[in-house]
Length: 298
Image (tube, rainbow, N blue to C red):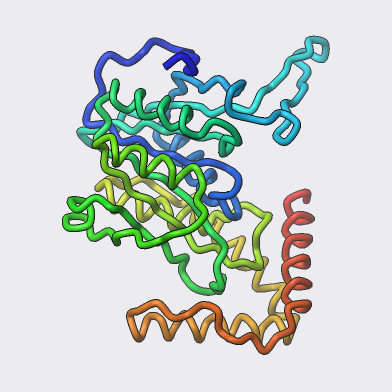
């Protein structure tokens, strides 16, 4: 594990640890996954114990380091970092290992091998990856979380869905497959984020991911903060859409499709014909982003 930089003493023994990952970028629509793992780390008092040296895994012309000033005099370079932290669950007989960082751009096999070796040393029982994707999904409905695994045990005992996806993948797909081939079962939790709300962090998506994770791992934490943030988030989006007749009609179409899925209990083709011009939806997306950005500054 030459790529690991230890910031604290290496834990000698962990209790039935689960590795939980979230990566910003392609796997993280509206930052729902990274917001979720940040919330979990803070609520569970997770302690950072190590980082993965970024030198081998990032193109610094694409994801640039930052210069910061300490005490208004000392300049310091802040590099992109993948942090590894541990939370000891006082109310459970297990510990959680959190991995968070930007999706690596280079040497994915080496990156996966580094995390797998760490997992083997800590006798990790399972890897759970958090992700979020854009979907034709209305913000007025609860966020749907797809929970998938190719582990027969997780499918049978936890009710997860076998993954049938084929196509391009991100680091989540690589890690899950790498761990499974090494004998560590993996699960992926994917939140469906409305495609017209993309660049503003989604507390609603984060909350849905955490809720499904808690169900999977059988623990509970207080989420009042996320509940309040979600209510405010929904209210601001609705205030924009309520003043736009075309946008309201488009959202109504999404709602009808979602309701049909629930009634039929099967996946309906999301590529339904839109009666609203895409230009109107692009305008809606831009308007929502500008509103939320201005509100955040206030």
